[in-house]
Amino acid sequence: MHGSISAQSANPTIPLTINGSTVRVAQGTSVAAALLQAGVAAHTSVSGEPRTPLCAMGICMECCATVNGVQHVRTCQLVVQPGMEVVTG
Figure 1 (cartoon, rainbow, N blue to C red):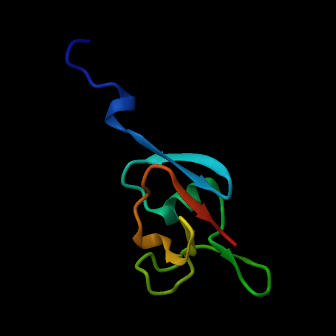
Figure 2 (figure 1 turned 135 degrees about the vertical axis):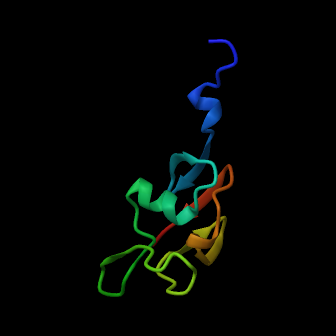
């Protein structure tokens, strides 16, 4: 069709690495949402339970992970950038 936009160009995806695996998410996705989409917990509690974002506004600290080598980043407050490296624990 003339003048139509392909689904790929209308919804660009951004690659990032989560615990060594490449994941692609929609542009504008928070790192916390990318972790949830990938089925990865942000960190593990002292009792060994997986922890994921709770408040989604940077207060509870349940979404913290290491991003680009920086520890304790609130992933719910950070938008995915191309090539970002996220390590959870």
